[in-house]
Length: 175
Image (cartoon, rainbow, N blue to C red; front, side, top):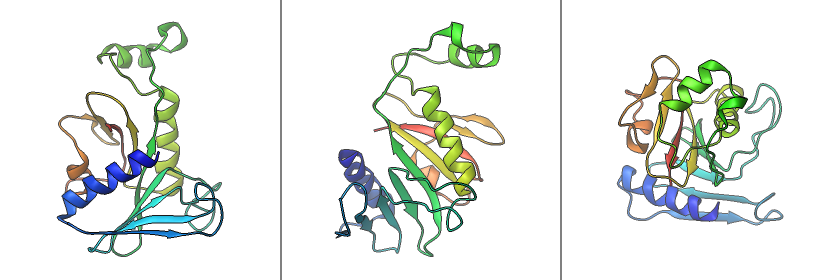
């Protein structure tokens, strides 16, 4: 998770055109559980590490803790990223017909686990996000738009473009 945090910070800095940024560590307890750790970009955006999203403040149901939470310049939570290092080659006997057809349409050299994709839907819905993305080791990225299904040639830069992204992108991005 730490490597993914710094890689995301680097990639976001490139997209924002920022050469320097501030990494803030406010030791309020155990670093991975209770600390307030985030990257503060010059444009006002912030990427938080393991920030707890409390119910009623962020979530309409239970509190959630995504690996990385992205806030815009107005301190609005716009998206989350979750590092996943589990890969799967699905057992087709375990899925219904729709999932089988979906699974057959992709190359299985690397595949995010379906349970991880479902978790991203949970984050997106409960936190009312523009996007929720899995970071996983792999060779390609796949994104799903709530209205259009699979979106080809999508990347982190396009994900942050407010004019291009409608509510509801869920995907997984190679790390």
